[in-house]
Image (cartoon, rainbow, N blue to C red):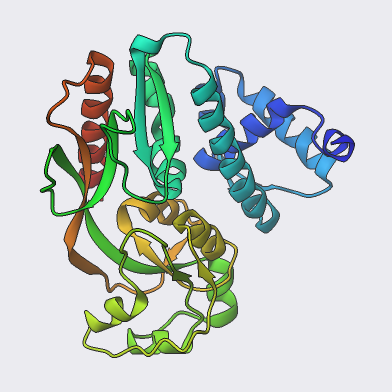
Length: 306
């Protein structure tokens, strides 16, 4: 840890960096953090000096991440997300206001985390606990308030609300495209490095399913990077390892910020959806109802903007 203290002089710099990199604006970062824009700019210059690398390209009224900045942001955002999860689990000073939300790592990091400040602003007394799981939770037996589940909205013992259709599109980083070029067609995707998701418990579409939707047969010969967590798939794509299958509700914020590119105009909308679920046999606490309604409202807003 001595090396870390030398490289990161102040843990506060990591929080400032995460917000600045997420918003790509020192001014908006200052507004979210409640500090001045010069304070944010100074903190980022100090962090760059201690790391010995430029993290941002500074332009008139905007900033964008350097390659080193993108790598650092991927690591910092995941790390702070895990710290937040652990802190939420430990800090239970107000048990009656505790709400447990069961989600995947990717949904926690790329859907919940960017919106979390809005939840805290609207409901500062709610103690939200994120339970990151790699399989569908049994909400009642695991004492979980709410969960996210893929399917068609009909599960015995649960009420549900659709928050996103399942739309899949191929995405890659700008660095990958600069080196390998854009695929010119769906068939041309065969000539590119594909990143594979191999979830151990939950069924998820594979590349062969995506190609089949466009009338093509894909033979998986075992090549390509294979990962068992979708957050790692996204991180690998942003690092330039290949083309990933992007769930639109998760990757849209990343494509809007230029961290990922949609490499084809073609997308596949499946018959499945992503639903927020809760037990129909147990009455939700008022805080859990507030979180449920907040997630539904956020999803409606996101769907309108796309």
